[in-house]
Image (cartoon, rainbow, N blue to C red; front, side, top):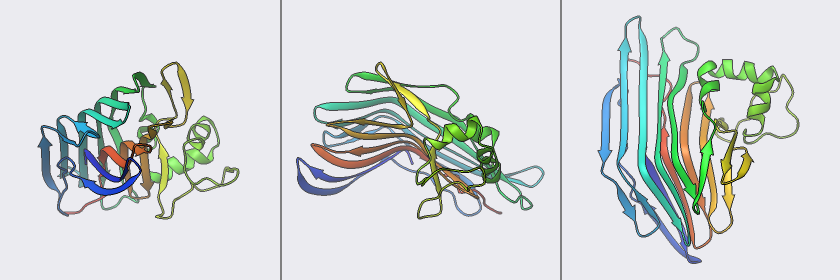
Length: 253
């Protein structure tokens, strides 16, 4: 899903509307391939975007492994909450899910996470490299959970971006889950905005709203990635998401 959005209010008045998003891709239960592209689009003077891609592939490989590869990208995205403008030159992510019928859990790893050319109100937003390393090193839910429980540097990194954590986390505490039973966190732990160093994955600016970077929703069988989620508030009250992938964990032929 390259892009989707909805509007609640404009200039303080109720104006509920669903923004026609970019073409998305999905697979049947037996896999196959689905590719959807577009040259871009716009919604009033609030959202603009360039070329998009949604590419989904589900295949059985030698050795009885079922592999799903999903890619989502969007170029030259802009969100305007007058007079402030957010820009992203390129947002793209690819996620690969692999499992066999004997696996307890699928391995789900990002092979591409790109947040390029981002700026808000004319100031650049920059991220540290290798955002996806922890999810590559610990590709199953249990492996991620076990590393979190060791309470080392991994624990400290993810503690600040986990959502729903109540009280102090002990070495035996399970990862906190939301009401849907999903662990919600981010692969961004810090970034710079202009000359500011910001901890966590959320950038807030009065007059514009909140920007959530590189969120992950995870359980034992799936990992859903959203590279950019906007909560606009002020002249425009709206929600938007860009470059989202969901490999759905498993499929069978």
